[in-house]
Length: 115
Length: 139
Image (cartoon, rainbow over all chains, first blue to last red):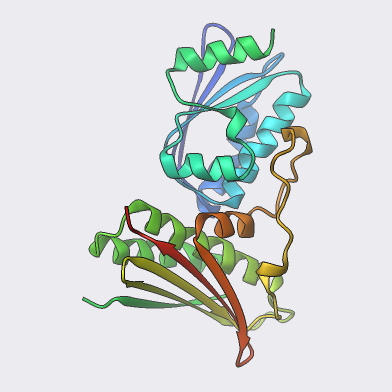
């Protein structure tokens, strides 16, 4: 499981995950993932286009991050999950945080939500 | 080519990745669609994890048996363990239509399995829990 982080010029955190969000994958990125969900308020785009599998631990990772970011007055969106991961997110109640589109679309959604 | 794969894994988290890889390889050799691979891996990860966490009072080695079967356009996954009797069909479904702040963290594994499969059956026979999931692989 790989995690790439970049801080965009507009203050948004961009986290790209590649691999499987299974037990091993979550264990490999969990600490760094939460650390990057920062900002004041946090604005976070999590690119899931490279994630092929998500289990309940992976859902839990994302849900906890969304809750934490929301509690700090911020917003986190899940960008371009694959079809099967998208289904799992929807079943788990995270559908409203999913966006299919470009990074610019995701950033615009963040700023709109935080107006 | 066999239409059935049986995996026997010990009650150890370290066993899960190899079991998932074996299942994925077997399904790929049979050109099963991605949804079959997803369900098989989800079943192994969630059910073996639950069994290791909650299934046993002792620290002895136990064997959890996973069977994959492809027949008549359907994937059938059966997971059998000798842990405490546990019927996941009796669990109430978590409420997932709430604001995210109110969503419960945890308890989603069985919910995901239930919703990702077409049918889930449970039986307790010969001192073992047997959970069977079915998924149509048709278009």
